Length: 166
Image (cartoon, rainbow, N blue to C red; front, side, top):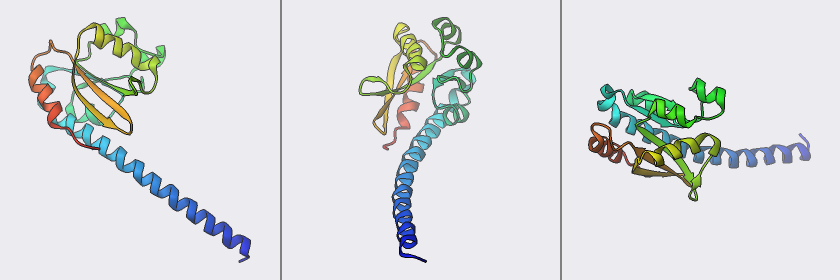
């Protein structure tokens, strides 16, 4: 092996080690966020017989573990949103999600205003109540709950009981 080849291998190993440590750092955050959504989903499971709907970009763990209907903000699991590029006010009035979880960074919608803005306008228009805020990777996930639903206080307590630090 030549000196150049040895240096190349050494450089690749060093850069790979840095990448792997960063990857494990982000994985641990992702895993903690996922675990929190699983915990919240499990805490909401007792309310599944009320036919409630959660709107979030957590397509997967929270709806799965809660057995609540899912309204995927990004449209990955929602044909209407996928085909139209976003939810419309009329579509949201028809779906009436009971719990809406929106991500914010520095006071603004964190990802795509095109997808999330209609949901934010919906919760404001319908006077939803902020029942929790979870922080992850410089993002605030704000939980808006419809104050008119049955078991509002019990659901709020269930969401708060699942708080984890990440």
